Image (cartoon, rainbow, N blue to C red; front, side, top):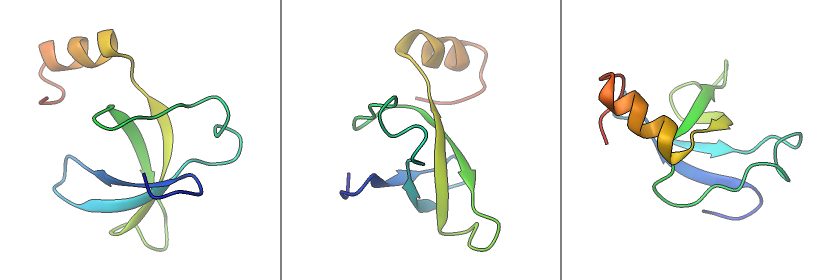
Length: 72
């Protein structure tokens, strides 16, 4: 967490991006350290910035790991 709805996210492609929570999600998404999130990279700076568009629940993250879609 970096304040102002921004946080650093380590992505599956090995890059660390500075991501923000868009205004329409800011009051509905409560994100903590080690949560699994879905990030949409920005078009202009896709290597370093992105938007967080979804937070997976613990059960969803376990299902994704069981299906070998992600590694926890």
